[in-house]
Image 1 (cartoon, rainbow over the protein chains, first blue to last red):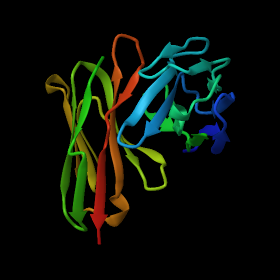
Image 2: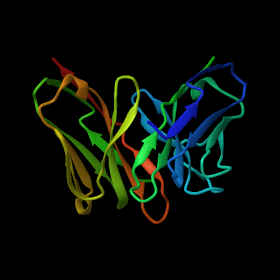
Image 3: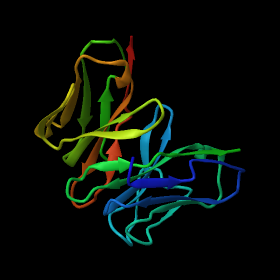
Image 4: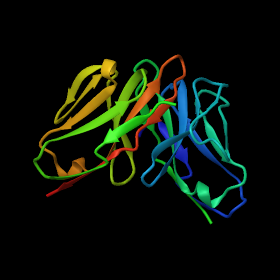
Length: 112
Length: 110
């Protein structure tokens, strides 16, 4: 969706490696979110940020860290990747005012 | 935490048929949204509907917040409607937490 950009789109990591998924939005969203999607599990919330400088845990935060350095950017970091973190990761922003959510295109991560 | 349940989990239709998808939630919420995930994985916002009824072409949605459910209606289905439909609820109390159901996978056959 226009306005929420995730990088990279694909990534393969070896077990134990670290990486940061980047998310940037230009739609003036206050709230931003990171989800993971696994077959049959829907979208599960990892972390979210209701405003710049604040972050909160979601349903599955273990093994992840996040950073909301400014209003535009919300990054997700895997410090020591594990095969269980193989998934598709989505970033989303919640539009201020209408509260509609808009998603990035996703990052397909494989940990071998 | 809040539970968001969608039914049915899978639905197969012939082109032209109508369908109703349901979303139940276990607690009071600030808002509710419906999304469509197309076969390429892209998530599109369909409706922002904390209460009442909205319509957009062949799709309409109704949320009855007091009874904690929402319905998504698809009329005269087309093959391009195929994909997964998710509902998501935003918790109240200033939390801004957005929680998804597991989705309904819709397949529309020609």
